[in-house]
Image (cartoon, rainbow, N blue to C red; front, side, top):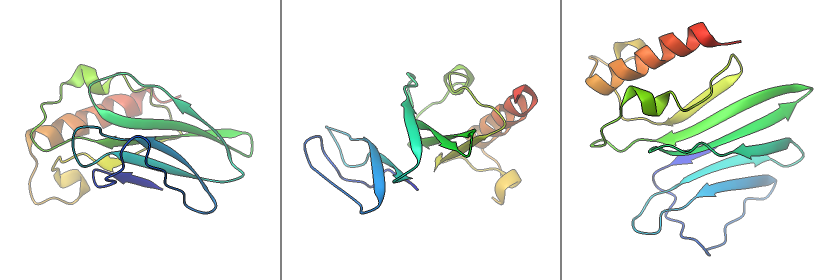
Length: 131
C-alpha cells in the first residue's frame, strides 16, 4: 500500500499499522511525505534511489520472484526532466505508484499535458528495456 503527499508525519513521530512494516519519507519543512506499507512476513528491502523526486523504492521477494514497487510524488508545479525519471531501474516486475500530477489520454484523462507526455515516453522506453 502506498500513500503520497498527505502523511503529515515528521521525523521522530511514531506511526504503526498492525500487520505492516512501514517505509517512510517524511518532510521536515512542510506537510506531506510518503509511506509504503509492506505486509509483515514478506521479505523486502529498501532501494535508495537518489534523484530530485520524492520517492520510496522497495523490492519485495514473493515466492522466489522479486517485485519492485516505486512510490513517487511529483508536485504540480515541479519541472521534471527525462533524465530524472531514467534514474529509476525499471524491469518487467516493477510497479510504479504515485501522485504524478500528469494528464494523459493513455490513462483516461480528457487531454494530455507536458508531464503526461513525458511519463508516456518514459513508459514506452522502459517497456522496451524490461528484462
